[in-house]
Amino acid sequence: MIQVKNLSFGYTDKPFIRDMNFEVREGEIFGFLGPSGAGKSTLQKILIGMLPKYEGSVRVNGIECREHEKDFYENIGVDFEFSTMYEKLTARENLRFFSSLYQRKPRSIEELLEAVGLLSDADKKVSDFSKGMKSRLNFIKALLHDPVLLFLDEPTSGLDPTNNRMMKDLILEEKKKGKTILLTTHNMQDATELCDRVAFIVNGEILALDSPHNLIMAKGAANVTYTWQEDGEKTAVCPLNEIAGDEKLRQLIVENRLQSIHSSEPTLNDIFMDITGRTLV
Ligand SMILES: Nc1ncnc2c1ncn2[C@@H]1O[C@H](COP(=O)(O)OP(=O)(O)OP(=O)(O)O)[C@@H](O)[C@H]1O
Ligand SMILES: [Mg+2]
Image 1 (tube, rainbow, N blue to C red):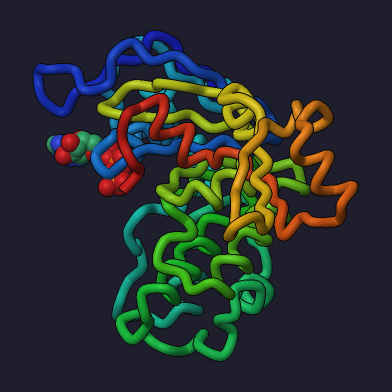
Image 2 (image 1 turned 180 degrees about the vertical axis):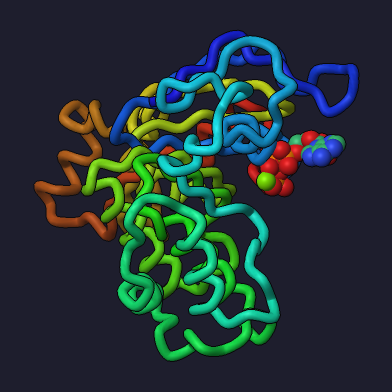
């Protein structure tokens, strides 16, 4: 669905993105993960044809981005990092206006508003919306014309836990319908849950690209930590794949003396820190 070959781009003479290569497959959720200023939004803007002065090749849905025509946007939906609504209009008026710009048959505005819990706020001016409400409204704007490809820039940022869950479920529903989704996030938990594959981006460069599962597994086996009482509380750690040979653990089980036992896998955040030497925020 997306092929990026030898992409270089700079806002100044000095290239910020240098010789980048990756592909996004049809039907997958692909995540750009990286700290603030890494180049995630820049990359998305190149992919949606907003920054045509790049070198190399960027093909989206078969079209070279710098050469796209107007109908390119019939097939893609964009949820920008910042609200792109007319503040003086109501939510419903905004959605009606934006859906009128497309030739494709629009989705039901009522249903979309309902899906993100905004139906009762539909006739409020957007200027009176909270940050999280604007963010949910921005998301459904991207779905209005039912595009095959969705670009979501930080779709879960600024949402409370309930709305975060709802947003993730809606994104997964779009995937189920066969949509290809490219999203950026700072949130490793969300990325692990949503993304088929992720690219770690730092300073305009991809430092790793794989499924969250493979990235986590490449770090090595999970550990098992167990505790017992013996002149106070004692703790031992053993790799999960070696517990059969752990004599102390076997003895504690036989004697029914285990106080606690739990396994812990590295998180995507640990892997990110390992590979990039930085934290995400
Ligand atoms: N229009 C612009 N003109 C000049 N420099 C820009 C422009 N937009 C972004 N940059 C610079 O490009 C770099 C990458 O910015 P970008 O917005 O792509 O980061 P990001 O990874 O999306 O960060 P965040 O997580 O904070 O949204 C930053 O150094 C930024 O200052
Ligand atoms: Mg950004």
